[in-house]
Amino acid sequence: MNQTQVDQSKYLSYVLRHHPDTINLYLRHDGYARTDELLAKANRNYNLDLATLVKIVAEDDKNRFQFNEDMTLIRATQGHSIDGLDLGFAEVVPPSELFHGTSYSAFLQITKTGITKQQRHHVHLSVDIDTASKVGKRHKPTGIVKGVILRIDALRMHKDGLKFWISENGVYLTEYVDFKYVFGIQLVTLNRPSVHCSLEQAVTFDTGAVESRQVDSCQGNQT
Image 1 (cartoon, rainbow, N blue to C red):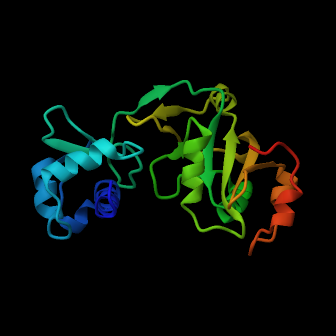
Image 2 (image 1 turned 90 degrees about the horizontal axis):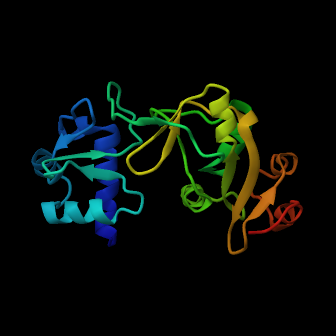
Image 3 (image 1 turned 90 degrees about the vertical axis):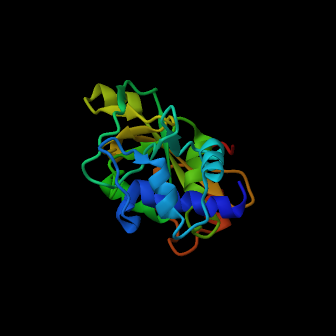
């Protein structure tokens, strides 16, 4: 997608996940909106036609949106903060481990509170490190640390009675992740390989600007 389409995609996420009210768009209980209504009302802010919308849905790297079979309806696949929706996620047994990408400052908070869903309906977990790394990299770097990947013992969570669901685009969802289920920490760094780090080391870094010498002190293999 070109930059205009990226901006349009972000706008669609904003409207379909969080604020349909900004364009007076009606969402059904399953999160779907009428495609023609979305296009008509979104065009007040963006030059969006059906062909462009189809391209955005098809080329989105995380499959954030989906049409129904005849493309008369469209919705965001997950990530909603709107009350009263039921997207019909399937409850599943998770794989043995899942991943969560975040910023270094958020990681420090997570060590105290666990991973909370905040304004969303669920905590989002990735099935692979690459996806979690992309999520972590969206945040503002802290020194040379561009993001933090947390490795989650998902199967232990499930055995302890915690539920998991999976969205249409393959994101694993849960209500909350206690920090006791985090068993690995990986720092995504600028212009160098990512580094596995112990909790004891990772929480001692300068929160203003993590330096190379601090990351170099981490034990473990580079990846």
